[in-house]
Image 1 (cartoon, rainbow, N blue to C red):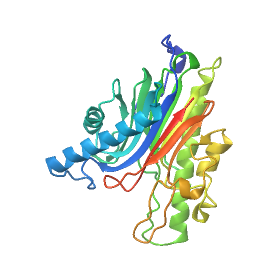
Image 2: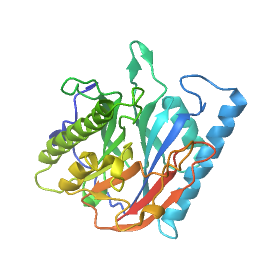
Image 3: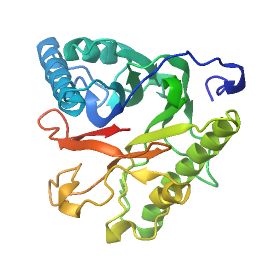
Image 4: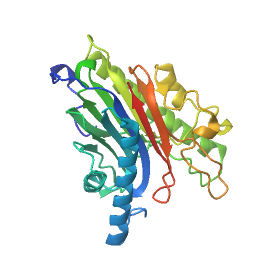
Amino acid sequence: MKRALLVCCTLVLISSVFGDVVVTTWNMKWFPSGIANLRNEDGVEQQAIANAGQRLAKAFKEQTRKSGADLVVLAQEVRDAEAMTNYINASGINGLKVVSVSNFKDGDVPLWQQVAILSTLPVLDAGYATWAKGIGVSIPRGFVYALLDGGDEGPIACFSLHLKSNLNLSGSEVESQKNMYKREAAAAQILAVVRKMRDAFPERELRVIVGGDFNTSDDSLEFVSEATLRSFYGAHFRSCFRDLKKSQKITHPGTNGFPDATFDYILYRGFDRIVGRKIYPGAPLSDHNLVALRLK
């Protein structure tokens, strides 16, 4: 890991009262250029930033309704911290700040496929980590994490992640199973971190949010043998899409012969209930939709 992970027991929570939390997740597709590991024309990138900020502002406004709420933003496939700062400025959301942005590299070259967390809540700790190598496989990228001060209701641990894609150049079943295994191994590592964090707060419940592009689904025959999402459900996490029909939770609209899919999830634990949720179209900025959830 890039830094020591959470010396939680030494932290003193700020004495404050906070209310509901709005959470969004969005795979932003090489934001802000829209091109893999390349910059675009300044005007194109500036327009993408403006449009993305407006999309986030709309989602937050609709989810806060007449009563206030704090905000946690989980983002994937972003260039760097500067891009996230510009995104915040374009949204105009008061108090929103960059909490953590990864710096994953291909050798010595930074990848422009980072993950990030933004929030209006006070930050107790934050950082990022690459995935530990699985048995016989290397797992790409990693995750960012943040421990946020949730006020009288206790701390909130947040994770933004982008799990292994389903790219299968060989078309073999072995390659498909390897992709699944890499996602399962990554999920196991997140759950191990959650257990360590929970043990640091023995006298109060740790609320947890895990969100991002999982590249798998819990309602598709293609992934029926995969345990990535089930491992979270077995650890008492709930899905933002619970009780919804398949047609109501499309986060990756089908293109080029691929069917509609639900790849982007917000999983949560320790909150009472969902009091608002909506999927916002990501096009033309991204091939993924933005998911917004309000938790109490």
